[in-house]
Amino acid sequence: MLGRLFQRGAGLVRFLLQQREQPETFFISTRWFLSALGLIYCVAFGSLWTQIRGLLGPRGILPVGDYLAALSAQVGPSRFWLVPTFSWWEPERGLLQTQCVAGLGFGLLLSLGVVPRLAALGVWALYLSLSSVGQEFLSYQWDTLLLETGFLAVCLAPPVWGSARAKARAPRGPALWLLRLLLFKLMFSSGVVKLLSGDPSWRHLTALTFHYETQPLPTWIGWYAHQLPAWFQIAAAAVMFVVELAVPWLIFAPRRLPLLAAGAFASLMVLISLTGNYCFFNLLTVVLCLPLVGDSVWERLLPPTYRPVPPPPAPEAPWRPVLRGAVVGTLFLLSGLNMVFRWLPAGSLPTPAVRLLQAVAPLRTFNAYGLFASMTRPRDEIVVEGSNNGEDWAPYEFKWKAGRLDRRPGFVAPYQPRLDWQMWFAALGNVDQHPWFLNLLSRLLQGSPDVLFLLDKNPFPRAPPRYVRAVLYEYHFTTFAQRRATGNWWRRERIGLYCPRLSLRPIPPPTPSKQTRT
Image (cartoon, rainbow, N blue to C red; front, side, top):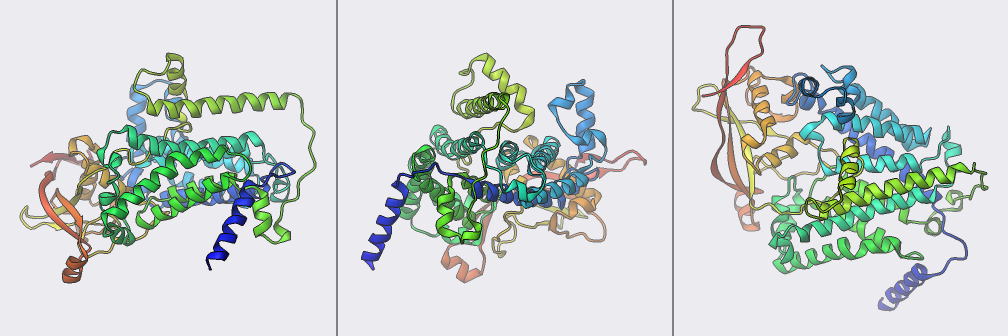
Protein backbone atom coordinates (compact mmCIF):
# COMPACT_ATOMS: atom_id res chain seq x y z
CA MET A 1 0.00 0.00 0.00
CA LEU A 2 2.74 2.47 0.95
CA GLY A 3 4.67 1.54 -2.19
CA ARG A 4 1.68 2.32 -4.41
CA LEU A 5 1.12 5.65 -2.69
CA PHE A 6 4.79 6.52 -3.13
CA GLN A 7 4.67 5.63 -6.82
CA ARG A 8 1.56 7.71 -7.37
CA GLY A 9 3.08 10.63 -5.50
CA ALA A 10 6.28 10.40 -7.53
CA GLY A 11 4.25 10.26 -10.73
CA LEU A 12 2.31 13.37 -9.69
CA VAL A 13 5.55 15.25 -8.98
CA ARG A 14 6.97 14.27 -12.37
CA PHE A 15 3.77 15.41 -14.06
CA LEU A 16 3.79 18.78 -12.27
CA LEU A 17 7.47 19.45 -13.02
CA GLN A 18 7.56 18.04 -16.55
CA GLN A 19 8.72 20.48 -19.21
CA ARG A 20 6.25 20.62 -22.10
CA GLU A 21 7.45 20.78 -25.68
CA GLN A 22 4.46 22.89 -26.72
CA PRO A 23 2.94 25.83 -24.84
CA GLU A 24 -0.02 24.92 -22.67
CA THR A 25 -3.48 25.65 -24.06
CA PHE A 26 -6.68 26.40 -22.15
CA PHE A 27 -9.55 25.76 -24.59
CA ILE A 28 -11.55 23.35 -22.42
CA SER A 29 -10.96 25.28 -19.20
CA THR A 30 -12.14 28.49 -20.85
CA ARG A 31 -15.26 26.81 -22.19
CA TRP A 32 -16.09 25.30 -18.81
CA PHE A 33 -15.27 28.50 -16.97
CA LEU A 34 -17.75 30.51 -19.04
CA SER A 35 -20.42 27.81 -18.77
CA ALA A 36 -20.01 27.50 -15.00
CA LEU A 37 -20.01 31.28 -14.57
CA GLY A 38 -23.25 31.47 -16.52
CA LEU A 39 -24.82 28.93 -14.15
CA ILE A 40 -23.62 30.88 -11.12
CA TYR A 41 -25.25 34.00 -12.53
CA CYS A 42 -28.45 31.99 -12.96
CA VAL A 43 -28.24 31.02 -9.28
CA ALA A 44 -27.58 34.62 -8.25
CA PHE A 45 -30.43 36.09 -10.30
CA GLY A 46 -32.81 33.27 -9.41
CA SER A 47 -32.04 33.62 -5.70
CA LEU A 48 -32.59 37.36 -5.85
CA TRP A 49 -35.79 37.02 -7.92
CA THR A 50 -37.54 35.15 -5.11
CA GLN A 51 -36.66 37.80 -2.51
CA ILE A 52 -36.41 41.11 -4.31
CA ARG A 53 -39.99 42.28 -3.78
CA GLY A 54 -39.68 41.89 -0.02
CA LEU A 55 -36.24 43.50 0.05
CA LEU A 56 -36.49 46.33 -2.49
CA GLY A 57 -40.05 46.44 -3.82
CA PRO A 58 -42.61 49.19 -3.12
CA ARG A 59 -43.84 47.30 -0.04
CA GLY A 60 -40.42 45.96 0.84
CA ILE A 61 -37.86 46.88 3.47
CA LEU A 62 -35.81 49.34 1.39
CA PRO A 63 -37.98 50.42 -1.56
CA VAL A 64 -36.01 51.29 -4.69
CA GLY A 65 -38.43 54.11 -5.48
CA ASP A 66 -37.68 55.91 -2.21
CA TYR A 67 -33.95 55.42 -2.67
CA LEU A 68 -33.88 56.84 -6.21
CA ALA A 69 -36.20 59.70 -5.28
CA ALA A 70 -33.93 60.74 -2.41
CA LEU A 71 -30.90 60.51 -4.69
CA SER A 72 -32.57 62.62 -7.38
CA ALA A 73 -33.35 65.31 -4.82
CA GLN A 74 -29.71 65.54 -3.72
CA VAL A 75 -27.69 64.87 -6.88
CA GLY A 76 -27.95 66.26 -10.39
CA PRO A 77 -27.35 64.45 -13.69
CA SER A 78 -24.30 62.74 -12.20
CA ARG A 79 -26.71 60.41 -10.38
CA PHE A 80 -26.86 58.26 -13.52
CA TRP A 81 -23.13 57.55 -13.18
CA LEU A 82 -23.06 57.34 -9.40
CA VAL A 83 -25.89 54.79 -9.45
CA PRO A 84 -25.73 53.01 -12.83
CA THR A 85 -29.01 51.12 -12.97
CA PHE A 86 -31.81 50.32 -15.41
CA SER A 87 -34.19 51.10 -12.55
CA TRP A 88 -34.03 54.80 -13.54
CA TRP A 89 -36.44 53.88 -16.34
CA GLU A 90 -39.08 52.94 -13.76
CA PRO A 91 -38.03 54.48 -10.44
CA GLU A 92 -41.16 53.51 -8.53
CA ARG A 93 -40.91 49.74 -8.98
CA GLY A 94 -37.41 49.59 -10.41
CA LEU A 95 -38.02 46.89 -13.02
CA LEU A 96 -36.70 44.57 -10.33
CA GLN A 97 -38.18 41.24 -11.33
CA THR A 98 -37.80 42.04 -15.02
CA GLN A 99 -34.07 42.51 -14.55
CA CYS A 100 -33.84 39.23 -12.65
CA VAL A 101 -35.60 37.35 -15.44
CA ALA A 102 -33.39 38.99 -18.09
CA GLY A 103 -30.32 38.07 -16.04
CA LEU A 104 -31.47 34.46 -15.91
CA GLY A 105 -31.82 34.47 -19.69
CA PHE A 106 -28.37 35.91 -20.33
CA GLY A 107 -26.85 33.54 -17.77
CA LEU A 108 -28.39 30.58 -19.59
CA LEU A 109 -27.02 31.82 -22.92
CA LEU A 110 -23.55 32.17 -21.40
CA SER A 111 -23.68 28.66 -19.93
CA LEU A 112 -24.66 27.24 -23.34
CA GLY A 113 -21.96 29.17 -25.19
CA VAL A 114 -24.45 31.12 -27.31
CA VAL A 115 -23.35 34.69 -28.08
CA PRO A 116 -20.95 34.39 -25.15
CA ARG A 117 -19.50 37.89 -25.16
CA LEU A 118 -22.91 39.54 -25.44
CA ALA A 119 -24.26 37.21 -22.74
CA ALA A 120 -21.33 37.99 -20.42
CA LEU A 121 -21.88 41.71 -20.95
CA GLY A 122 -25.59 41.27 -20.27
CA VAL A 123 -25.24 39.44 -16.95
CA TRP A 124 -22.60 41.91 -15.77
CA ALA A 125 -24.68 44.97 -16.66
CA LEU A 126 -27.86 43.59 -15.10
CA TYR A 127 -26.16 42.50 -11.88
CA LEU A 128 -24.48 45.90 -11.65
CA SER A 129 -27.88 47.53 -12.12
CA LEU A 130 -29.45 45.55 -9.27
CA SER A 131 -26.40 45.89 -7.00
CA SER A 132 -26.42 49.66 -7.45
CA VAL A 133 -29.90 49.93 -5.91
CA GLY A 134 -29.64 46.94 -3.58
CA GLN A 135 -28.22 49.05 -0.75
CA GLU A 136 -27.40 46.88 2.30
CA PHE A 137 -28.85 43.74 0.75
CA LEU A 138 -26.46 43.56 -2.21
CA SER A 139 -23.27 44.89 -0.65
CA TYR A 140 -21.52 41.60 0.09
CA GLN A 141 -18.04 40.76 -1.14
CA TRP A 142 -19.30 37.88 -3.30
CA ASP A 143 -21.60 40.31 -5.10
CA THR A 144 -18.63 42.46 -6.07
CA LEU A 145 -16.55 39.35 -6.82
CA LEU A 146 -19.26 38.16 -9.21
CA LEU A 147 -19.24 41.56 -10.91
CA GLU A 148 -15.46 41.62 -11.30
CA THR A 149 -15.40 38.04 -12.58
CA GLY A 150 -18.23 38.78 -15.01
CA PHE A 151 -16.47 41.85 -16.37
CA LEU A 152 -13.29 39.88 -17.00
CA ALA A 153 -15.38 37.17 -18.65
CA VAL A 154 -16.43 39.78 -21.23
CA CYS A 155 -12.75 40.07 -22.17
CA LEU A 156 -12.31 36.28 -22.21
CA ALA A 157 -15.47 35.29 -24.10
CA PRO A 158 -15.15 34.95 -27.89
CA PRO A 159 -17.03 37.62 -29.88
CA VAL A 160 -18.90 35.10 -32.03
CA TRP A 161 -22.47 33.99 -32.59
CA GLY A 162 -23.34 30.38 -31.82
CA SER A 163 -21.88 27.79 -29.47
CA ALA A 164 -20.08 25.77 -32.16
CA ARG A 165 -17.87 28.66 -33.22
CA ALA A 166 -17.31 29.72 -29.63
CA LYS A 167 -15.83 26.31 -28.82
CA ALA A 168 -13.31 26.72 -31.63
CA ARG A 169 -11.93 30.08 -30.58
CA ALA A 170 -8.66 30.24 -28.67
CA PRO A 171 -8.83 32.16 -25.38
CA ARG A 172 -6.75 35.30 -25.17
CA GLY A 173 -3.75 34.98 -22.87
CA PRO A 174 -4.12 38.45 -21.29
CA ALA A 175 -7.71 37.71 -20.23
CA LEU A 176 -6.61 34.46 -18.58
CA TRP A 177 -3.90 36.30 -16.66
CA LEU A 178 -6.40 38.88 -15.47
CA LEU A 179 -8.53 36.10 -14.02
CA ARG A 180 -5.47 34.57 -12.35
CA LEU A 181 -4.61 37.95 -10.87
CA LEU A 182 -8.16 38.18 -9.51
CA LEU A 183 -7.82 34.75 -7.88
CA PHE A 184 -4.46 35.75 -6.40
CA LYS A 185 -5.92 39.00 -5.09
CA LEU A 186 -8.88 37.19 -3.53
CA MET A 187 -6.90 34.48 -1.75
CA PHE A 188 -3.78 36.42 -0.76
CA SER A 189 -5.76 39.41 0.48
CA SER A 190 -7.88 37.11 2.63
CA GLY A 191 -4.77 36.11 4.52
CA VAL A 192 -3.17 39.54 4.66
CA VAL A 193 -6.20 41.34 6.10
CA LYS A 194 -6.43 38.81 8.92
CA LEU A 195 -2.88 39.61 9.99
CA LEU A 196 -3.20 43.37 9.47
CA SER A 197 -6.45 43.56 11.45
CA GLY A 198 -4.60 43.04 14.72
CA ASP A 199 -7.18 40.49 15.87
CA PRO A 200 -5.31 38.34 18.44
CA SER A 201 -7.42 35.29 17.61
CA TRP A 202 -5.83 35.15 14.15
CA ARG A 203 -2.32 35.85 15.42
CA HIS A 204 -2.66 33.11 18.04
CA LEU A 205 -4.43 30.75 15.61
CA THR A 206 -7.44 30.41 17.93
CA ALA A 207 -10.11 31.93 15.65
CA LEU A 208 -11.54 28.57 14.58
CA THR A 209 -12.23 27.59 18.17
CA PHE A 210 -15.31 29.83 17.98
CA HIS A 211 -15.71 30.70 14.28
CA TYR A 212 -18.06 27.82 13.45
CA GLU A 213 -20.40 28.97 16.22
CA THR A 214 -20.33 32.71 15.46
CA GLN A 215 -20.39 32.69 11.64
CA PRO A 216 -23.59 34.04 10.04
CA LEU A 217 -25.30 30.83 8.89
CA PRO A 218 -23.55 27.68 10.15
CA THR A 219 -24.50 24.19 9.02
CA TRP A 220 -25.02 21.13 11.19
CA ILE A 221 -21.53 19.99 10.12
CA GLY A 222 -20.29 23.28 11.57
CA TRP A 223 -21.84 22.20 14.89
CA TYR A 224 -19.73 19.04 14.82
CA ALA A 225 -16.63 20.97 13.71
CA HIS A 226 -17.06 23.22 16.74
CA GLN A 227 -16.75 20.19 19.03
CA LEU A 228 -13.27 19.28 17.74
CA PRO A 229 -10.37 19.77 20.19
CA ALA A 230 -8.48 23.06 20.36
CA TRP A 231 -5.24 21.59 18.99
CA PHE A 232 -7.05 20.56 15.82
CA GLN A 233 -8.59 24.04 15.41
CA ILE A 234 -5.17 25.65 15.81
CA ALA A 235 -3.64 23.30 13.23
CA ALA A 236 -6.50 23.98 10.81
CA ALA A 237 -5.99 27.76 11.16
CA ALA A 238 -2.28 27.32 10.42
CA VAL A 239 -3.05 25.30 7.28
CA MET A 240 -5.53 27.96 6.21
CA PHE A 241 -2.85 30.66 6.45
CA VAL A 242 -0.53 28.53 4.31
CA VAL A 243 -3.23 28.20 1.67
CA GLU A 244 -4.05 31.92 1.73
CA LEU A 245 -0.55 33.40 2.04
CA ALA A 246 1.93 30.95 0.49
CA VAL A 247 -0.04 28.92 -2.06
CA PRO A 248 -1.30 31.92 -4.11
CA TRP A 249 2.24 32.53 -5.38
CA LEU A 250 2.06 29.17 -7.19
CA ILE A 251 -0.48 30.77 -9.53
CA PHE A 252 2.44 32.41 -11.33
CA ALA A 253 4.80 29.40 -11.10
CA PRO A 254 6.11 27.63 -14.25
CA ARG A 255 5.10 24.28 -15.69
CA ARG A 256 2.08 22.68 -14.01
CA LEU A 257 2.68 23.93 -10.44
CA PRO A 258 -0.42 26.19 -10.60
CA LEU A 259 -2.41 22.95 -10.41
CA LEU A 260 -1.33 22.65 -6.77
CA ALA A 261 -2.80 26.09 -6.10
CA ALA A 262 -6.05 25.14 -7.81
CA GLY A 263 -6.32 21.95 -5.77
CA ALA A 264 -5.56 23.72 -2.48
CA PHE A 265 -8.04 26.54 -3.11
CA ALA A 266 -10.80 24.16 -4.21
CA SER A 267 -10.24 21.95 -1.15
CA LEU A 268 -10.44 24.96 1.19
CA MET A 269 -13.67 26.11 -0.46
CA VAL A 270 -15.23 22.67 -0.07
CA LEU A 271 -14.37 22.59 3.64
CA ILE A 272 -15.77 26.09 4.16
CA SER A 273 -18.99 25.22 2.34
CA LEU A 274 -19.46 22.14 4.52
CA THR A 275 -19.39 24.14 7.75
CA GLY A 276 -21.10 27.40 6.71
CA ASN A 277 -23.47 28.86 4.11
CA TYR A 278 -21.75 31.50 1.98
CA CYS A 279 -24.16 31.45 -0.97
CA PHE A 280 -22.29 31.20 -4.30
CA PHE A 281 -18.93 32.48 -2.98
CA ASN A 282 -17.28 29.08 -2.58
CA LEU A 283 -18.56 27.85 -5.93
CA LEU A 284 -17.40 31.01 -7.70
CA THR A 285 -13.92 30.70 -6.17
CA VAL A 286 -13.65 27.11 -7.41
CA VAL A 287 -14.68 28.26 -10.89
CA LEU A 288 -11.95 30.92 -10.77
CA CYS A 289 -9.46 28.06 -10.37
CA LEU A 290 -10.31 26.66 -13.83
CA PRO A 291 -7.98 29.06 -15.73
CA LEU A 292 -5.12 27.38 -13.87
CA VAL A 293 -5.90 23.97 -15.38
CA GLY A 294 -4.38 23.40 -18.82
CA ASP A 295 -5.71 21.16 -21.55
CA SER A 296 -2.93 18.63 -20.93
CA VAL A 297 -4.68 17.77 -17.66
CA TRP A 298 -8.02 17.23 -19.36
CA GLU A 299 -6.29 15.04 -21.96
CA ARG A 300 -5.51 12.59 -19.16
CA LEU A 301 -8.99 12.73 -17.67
CA LEU A 302 -11.39 13.04 -20.61
CA PRO A 303 -12.14 10.70 -23.54
CA PRO A 304 -10.71 11.72 -26.94
CA THR A 305 -14.00 13.22 -28.15
CA TYR A 306 -13.72 15.94 -25.51
CA ARG A 307 -10.10 16.81 -26.11
CA PRO A 308 -9.41 20.26 -27.53
CA VAL A 309 -8.61 20.83 -31.17
CA PRO A 310 -6.38 23.89 -31.58
CA PRO A 311 -7.95 26.33 -34.05
CA PRO A 312 -5.93 27.70 -36.94
CA PRO A 313 -4.34 31.08 -36.22
CA ALA A 314 -6.60 33.91 -37.30
CA PRO A 315 -5.15 37.10 -38.81
CA GLU A 316 -5.47 40.21 -36.69
CA ALA A 317 -5.57 43.87 -37.54
CA PRO A 318 -2.41 45.66 -36.35
CA TRP A 319 -4.35 47.92 -34.00
CA ARG A 320 -5.99 45.08 -32.04
CA PRO A 321 -2.90 44.03 -30.02
CA VAL A 322 -2.24 47.68 -29.17
CA LEU A 323 -5.81 48.20 -27.98
CA ARG A 324 -5.77 44.92 -26.07
CA GLY A 325 -2.54 45.87 -24.35
CA ALA A 326 -3.95 49.24 -23.28
CA VAL A 327 -7.12 47.64 -21.89
CA VAL A 328 -5.25 44.89 -20.06
CA GLY A 329 -2.75 47.37 -18.62
CA THR A 330 -5.55 49.57 -17.31
CA LEU A 331 -7.34 46.60 -15.72
CA PHE A 332 -4.11 45.37 -14.12
CA LEU A 333 -3.56 48.85 -12.69
CA LEU A 334 -7.07 49.16 -11.25
CA SER A 335 -7.01 45.66 -9.80
CA GLY A 336 -3.60 46.13 -8.21
CA LEU A 337 -4.41 49.56 -6.79
CA ASN A 338 -7.52 48.27 -5.05
CA MET A 339 -5.59 45.40 -3.51
CA VAL A 340 -2.81 47.66 -2.20
CA PHE A 341 -5.27 50.36 -1.11
CA ARG A 342 -6.95 47.81 1.20
CA TRP A 343 -3.67 47.10 2.98
CA LEU A 344 -2.23 50.60 3.34
CA PRO A 345 -3.39 53.28 5.78
CA ALA A 346 -5.54 56.15 4.52
CA GLY A 347 -3.61 58.77 2.61
CA SER A 348 -0.82 56.42 1.52
CA LEU A 349 -1.77 56.32 -2.16
CA PRO A 350 -0.99 59.27 -4.44
CA THR A 351 -3.90 61.62 -5.08
CA PRO A 352 -4.22 60.69 -8.81
CA ALA A 353 -4.54 57.01 -7.88
CA VAL A 354 -7.22 57.75 -5.29
CA ARG A 355 -9.17 59.85 -7.80
CA LEU A 356 -8.94 57.08 -10.38
CA LEU A 357 -10.35 54.54 -7.92
CA GLN A 358 -13.12 56.96 -6.91
CA ALA A 359 -14.01 57.53 -10.57
CA VAL A 360 -14.57 53.83 -11.29
CA ALA A 361 -16.07 52.99 -7.87
CA PRO A 362 -19.70 53.17 -9.12
CA LEU A 363 -18.97 50.23 -11.42
CA ARG A 364 -18.34 48.00 -8.37
CA THR A 365 -16.01 45.99 -10.60
CA PHE A 366 -12.49 46.67 -9.32
CA ASN A 367 -12.48 45.64 -5.70
CA ALA A 368 -10.50 44.66 -2.65
CA TYR A 369 -11.29 41.47 -0.76
CA GLY A 370 -10.72 39.87 2.60
CA LEU A 371 -13.36 37.99 4.56
CA PHE A 372 -13.42 37.79 8.38
CA ALA A 373 -10.57 40.22 8.95
CA SER A 374 -11.83 40.61 12.53
CA MET A 375 -13.66 37.77 14.22
CA THR A 376 -16.89 38.35 16.11
CA ARG A 377 -17.36 36.86 19.55
CA PRO A 378 -19.75 36.01 21.10
CA ARG A 379 -22.73 35.35 18.82
CA ASP A 380 -25.60 37.77 19.41
CA GLU A 381 -28.94 37.09 17.76
CA ILE A 382 -31.99 39.30 17.35
CA VAL A 383 -35.40 37.77 17.98
CA VAL A 384 -38.29 39.83 16.57
CA GLU A 385 -41.54 39.54 18.52
CA GLY A 386 -45.08 40.80 18.12
CA SER A 387 -47.93 41.39 20.57
CA ASN A 388 -51.48 42.68 20.62
CA ASN A 389 -51.59 43.65 24.28
CA GLY A 390 -47.98 44.57 25.05
CA GLU A 391 -47.64 41.71 27.52
CA ASP A 392 -47.86 38.42 25.62
CA TRP A 393 -45.18 38.24 22.89
CA ALA A 394 -44.86 35.74 20.04
CA PRO A 395 -41.64 35.43 17.98
CA TYR A 396 -41.37 35.72 14.21
CA GLU A 397 -39.29 32.84 12.86
CA PHE A 398 -36.75 33.34 10.08
CA LYS A 399 -36.04 30.66 7.53
CA TRP A 400 -32.34 30.05 8.12
CA LYS A 401 -30.77 32.15 10.85
CA ALA A 402 -30.44 30.88 14.42
CA GLY A 403 -33.74 31.12 16.28
CA ARG A 404 -35.51 28.10 17.72
CA LEU A 405 -33.08 26.17 19.91
CA ASP A 406 -34.07 22.73 18.63
CA ARG A 407 -33.87 23.56 14.92
CA ARG A 408 -30.87 21.95 13.24
CA PRO A 409 -28.66 24.37 11.27
CA GLY A 410 -29.22 23.58 7.61
CA PHE A 411 -27.67 23.87 4.17
CA VAL A 412 -29.00 26.66 1.95
CA ALA A 413 -26.03 27.66 -0.28
CA PRO A 414 -25.70 28.59 -3.11
CA TYR A 415 -29.02 30.31 -2.40
CA GLN A 416 -28.55 33.36 -0.15
CA PRO A 417 -31.33 34.39 2.26
CA ARG A 418 -30.27 38.02 2.30
CA LEU A 419 -32.55 39.15 5.13
CA ASP A 420 -31.22 36.38 7.39
CA TRP A 421 -27.66 37.45 6.56
CA GLN A 422 -28.43 41.10 7.25
CA MET A 423 -29.93 40.21 10.62
CA TRP A 424 -26.53 38.79 11.61
CA PHE A 425 -24.87 42.11 10.75
CA ALA A 426 -27.56 44.06 12.61
CA ALA A 427 -26.76 42.13 15.79
CA LEU A 428 -23.14 43.38 15.62
CA GLY A 429 -24.27 46.95 16.31
CA ASN A 430 -27.33 48.76 17.63
CA VAL A 431 -30.60 49.71 16.03
CA ASP A 432 -29.48 53.29 15.33
CA GLN A 433 -26.68 51.95 13.12
CA HIS A 434 -29.11 49.93 11.01
CA PRO A 435 -32.07 52.11 9.93
CA TRP A 436 -33.32 49.38 7.59
CA PHE A 437 -34.22 47.33 10.68
CA LEU A 438 -36.83 49.90 11.70
CA ASN A 439 -38.27 49.61 8.19
CA LEU A 440 -38.52 45.85 8.69
CA LEU A 441 -40.46 46.32 11.92
CA SER A 442 -42.71 48.86 10.24
CA ARG A 443 -43.54 46.39 7.43
CA LEU A 444 -44.39 43.74 10.00
CA LEU A 445 -46.78 46.15 11.70
CA GLN A 446 -48.36 46.80 8.30
CA GLY A 447 -48.53 43.09 7.50
CA SER A 448 -46.68 43.46 4.19
CA PRO A 449 -47.06 40.12 2.37
CA ASP A 450 -43.83 40.70 0.42
CA VAL A 451 -41.81 41.00 3.63
CA LEU A 452 -43.67 38.19 5.41
CA PHE A 453 -42.76 35.94 2.46
CA LEU A 454 -39.11 36.27 3.54
CA LEU A 455 -39.92 34.76 6.96
CA ASP A 456 -40.57 31.15 7.91
CA LYS A 457 -43.42 31.65 10.37
CA ASN A 458 -45.79 34.55 10.93
CA PRO A 459 -47.35 34.23 14.41
CA PHE A 460 -50.13 36.66 13.38
CA PRO A 461 -51.65 35.14 10.21
CA ARG A 462 -55.03 36.88 10.45
CA ALA A 463 -53.94 40.47 11.12
CA PRO A 464 -50.66 42.20 11.96
CA PRO A 465 -49.92 42.78 15.65
CA ARG A 466 -50.36 46.08 17.40
CA TYR A 467 -46.81 46.10 18.75
CA VAL A 468 -43.44 44.72 17.70
CA ARG A 469 -40.10 44.69 19.48
CA ALA A 470 -36.66 43.07 19.14
CA VAL A 471 -34.89 41.14 21.89
CA LEU A 472 -31.16 40.42 21.89
CA TYR A 473 -29.85 37.01 22.95
CA GLU A 474 -26.39 35.48 23.20
CA TYR A 475 -26.36 32.14 21.37
CA HIS A 476 -23.96 29.23 21.75
CA PHE A 477 -23.77 25.75 20.28
CA THR A 478 -24.69 23.04 22.74
CA THR A 479 -22.22 20.32 23.67
CA PHE A 480 -22.71 16.61 22.93
CA ALA A 481 -24.00 16.09 26.48
CA GLN A 482 -26.40 19.05 26.34
CA ARG A 483 -27.78 17.94 22.99
CA ARG A 484 -28.36 14.39 24.22
CA ALA A 485 -30.19 15.74 27.26
CA THR A 486 -32.33 18.41 25.55
CA GLY A 487 -32.28 17.69 21.82
CA ASN A 488 -31.25 21.31 21.22
CA TRP A 489 -28.54 22.48 18.84
CA TRP A 490 -28.36 25.90 20.52
CA ARG A 491 -28.51 27.40 23.99
CA ARG A 492 -29.04 31.08 24.69
CA GLU A 493 -29.10 33.77 27.34
CA ARG A 494 -31.15 36.95 27.17
CA ILE A 495 -29.13 40.18 27.02
CA GLY A 496 -31.94 42.73 26.81
CA LEU A 497 -33.95 44.74 24.30
CA TYR A 498 -32.38 45.48 20.95
CA CYS A 499 -35.29 47.72 20.02
CA PRO A 500 -38.14 48.74 22.35
CA ARG A 501 -41.69 48.10 21.32
CA LEU A 502 -43.01 50.04 18.34
CA SER A 503 -46.50 50.70 17.09
CA LEU A 504 -48.08 52.56 14.20
CA ARG A 505 -49.66 55.92 14.92
CA PRO A 506 -53.05 56.01 13.16
CA ILE A 507 -53.42 58.94 10.81
CA PRO A 508 -56.10 59.78 8.24
CA PRO A 509 -55.76 57.98 4.91
CA PRO A 510 -54.35 58.08 2.31
CA THR A 511 -51.16 59.36 3.97
CA PRO A 512 -48.79 56.42 4.73
CA SER A 513 -48.52 55.39 8.37
CA LYS A 514 -45.60 56.56 10.50
CA GLN A 515 -43.60 54.94 13.27
CA THR A 516 -43.61 56.06 16.87
CA ARG A 517 -41.96 54.57 19.90
CA THR A 518 -44.22 53.81 22.83
